[in-house]
Length: 459
Image 1 (tube, helix red, strand yellow):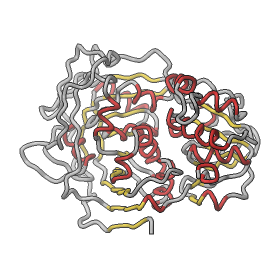
Image 2 (cartoon, helix red, strand yellow):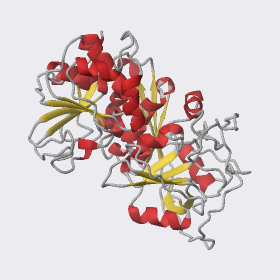
Image 3 (cartoon, helix red, strand yellow):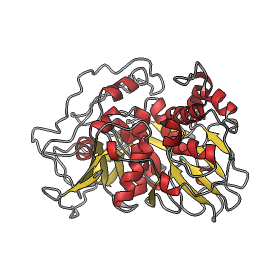
Image 4 (cartoon, helix red, strand yellow):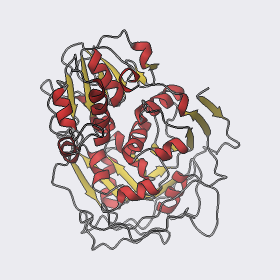
């Protein structure tokens, strides 16, 4: 059996606590002695050296030690408390604020923790904000990142508390450097076993959402651990955390490890201190998965939790394939799609749209050789397979948009997509049908014109 639910040994109290508005509101937030001091003279865009702090030990949160989860520890540090429990309402000092321009999806403004004279907006268009944040070195373990988009939770892949907020809250953070937040209880997802060669992180998160439903983690932290998670690269971990919001989660989070530290080398010169859940920490529920027994999945219309095996949908005729978005438009996602197309040696049978998440991903598509291809890049493989030319970086049809939006569904068509939502009208036409899938499954489906299990080409 691939999945089991372990009942928690203790259930944290969810009662509301009394609120106290801090009397020391100011433009500059006070940094706790338990937090890393970051010189205000450093600019967050001049990331030329790896972090100086090389010892990454589990963090304590004060002289009184109480078993806590990762998210609880980050809240405690950011609110200058020794310990916290789920349901506590606290003023949390914010390290990074990301603003999102809906007129140009992915435009980002980033403000450092002091929120004073060094606060700086990024005038350059990088692409989809959630991927650009990681590439620019703004996702650091143990910190608090808030952003004006629901998929800000992507940054939890770095052991960071990251969640989406509204524009009013963002304005408050700009003025105060902090925000009132409630400590969420934590659901722990333990994934063990060797990852089959035909599975990707998208399959894992679709499995989880299918188990707990789109409301199963409402205002809860989703912590992803286990040997399978440890084997994932950073972009795959980003996919896991990205879709925590599709289960109603407040945030998704993965413990930082050597893979995290290696990714951050050369991207940030700021020190950071990761935290880890204590052995005796209290989790609301714990779910266990034997990943070696899982199969490629899709989420059928019109909900991310409408899970089905890809092979069970082999008779579903499709009209197009879309590979892109903050969930499925990263470099590793395009490398995966190219791998399937290369293995088949065939051409796609339906229009296949490719939308890289950022400028860097776009460059990678044209410059990085695909393993086993004899030096061919993704762009060459896509061209030979008859795919559409990779578009400029953006969210594009993932969020619908005007009728002239690239790859938008303007008719009631069926689309296999690597995006994160398949609600009616999400990619345009309200009668369109969207099957959410991994890049492997999306590429395999493009080759046949039907929803297709990628094992047909990968084994």
